[in-house]
Image (cartoon, rainbow, N blue to C red; front, side, top):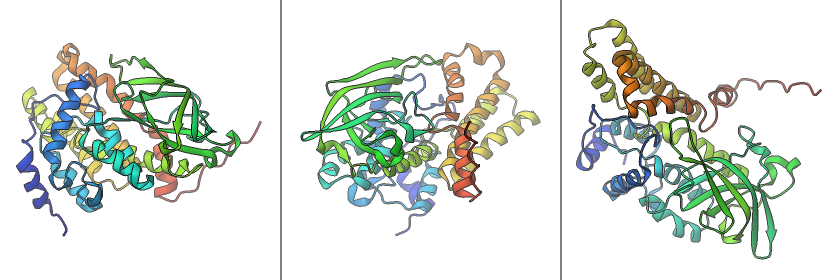
Length: 368
């Protein structure tokens, strides 16, 4: 049965209060006590659990609502009108780790991890980027060495969000030669409390420490923690990154509720100013296009643009007062990072050109 916008709206009205246009706009955990934030996430997931609405894109047999793409678009469009907590603490689990376990995990792995992931009882992080392998993920150097009964992981990961409070990590490691690049990478599930896992927090410009350097010092894992085939991690990585670029953009927890834009303009007393109205219209247009975009890179770029425009709008109507607001300063200092997280905007535009529009790839630069 196809769920219409009215059907979805009725479900949400039964479970969630309407959005508050005067509420602080959350930006992926910025300036938030993540302990309290996690409890709000769990409350939301509990309220949305009947019928699988907390994980609307998961299959019904795994506790989701089984919505197709059109239904998901309607779901997120309707969700923007309701009070949804910042789901930052649980986004990796709901949008990336969980779907990858559904895709590549064994029945035993699915039985172990999907339910606590779906409810937010267990939190995930993602260990992909390295100091020498950011946009060039195929160049990662963290090593997975086969040992009797399992694996030994050694290396360094960086910019690992949520690592400080995560129970599990989805990690990529090299199981073959560096020259083999993407053909020799394997995916693993990493218990974050395993001996040899060392975390070093990274303090950001917005004063948060949500990211960490993670050192893997001969971390031993049995083969039950391997996800998918040996040397088959690249397919999991690409599917995970595609999900990463769209999960925040499609989630009601990231971005700006339209009500917040209207509330900001009305509160400022500048609703009759044509320049302010034009700036507000630009934000609302980006938000609409964000929810209509059919490709993950396009959604990710529009999310970053909408947040920057909203920050500019707020500063233009609030003036110097915005600089005295600690919450707003945190948002302003966080928005530039949205152009980097999940792959830079420049990389996303290449992806759109080559994979969505079918344009030819740039020629390789000549070797010196």
